[in-house]
Structures are given as structure tokens and as C-alpha cells.
Image (cartoon, rainbow, N blue to C red; front, side):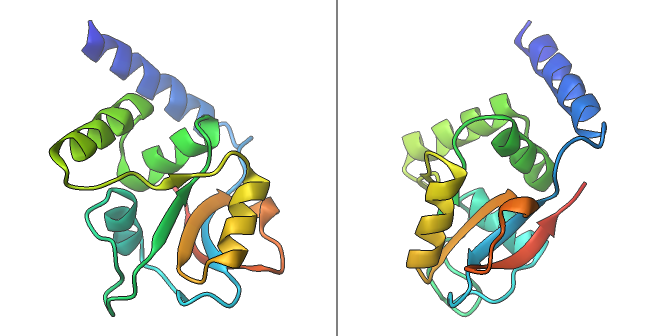
Amino acid sequence: MAYLYQALLAIMLSLTFHGGAWAQLVIVSGKNGAVSELSRSQAERLFLGRATTLQDNTPVTLIDLPPGPERDRFYLVLTGKNPVQTRAYWSRQVFTGRALPPRQASSVEELRQWLSEDDNAIGYLPQEHVGERLRVLLQVSE
């Protein structure tokens, strides 16, 4: 039964996201941040807790949007995990002590503020919310 629920949820999300109504999501850092570029594989490793630093050993602080459709779509497109799978994955990571999930902002505005204040912070948001204080590191596309 749980598998059926997950399959239906994944189908509904994919149909919704292919409708073209969603803004492009981008991974960003502060304009003067230590991170200047990011590959898709690096982003996936970071946002799944498989890495906490970049290849040059620069530590990063990851920031998630609050739970909702943009966050769900981000993880689905970047990692291939639907919301149920993402929550289960992070529950296992935390329970086994392997990794902690990204810090969670309460809003896009809070995420933007944290990114501009922390040179090692990386987050994601809809492209229309990127201002002059942020640098786009990677476009997250399907």
C-alpha cells in the first residue's frame, strides 16, 4: 500500500512539474561567498549529506526552503527522490549518525538573508528571487 501511495505521489508531482507553471530553481550562494561554481554531481552529494565540503575542502553550510512544493520539486529533480523518499532518507541518515539535514529557513527571504551573511552557505530558490546579493551556482533543470 505504501508503495502505491509513493508511486501515485511521484506521478502527480511529475505531471504537475511538467505543466510549465513552475519557476526555474537555482542553487545559489552569497555574491561574495567562497563558492563560485558547483557541478550537478557536487550539488547532489552535498544535498544528500554525502559530502560536507567542496573538492578544495571548503566547508559549506546548506540551507533548505521550508517544506512545500518548491522543496519537494528541488529534491525530486536533483536527486530523483520524491518527498516521502527524501524524508525517509534523512531519517536514516540522522538515526545512524551519518549526516544532518540542511538548515531549514522559514521563508525565501530568510534564506536570502542567511546566504548573504554566510560566505560558505549554499541554498536554492526560484530564479525570480535571485537578487544582486546572490550568485547563481547551478540551474536545477529536469
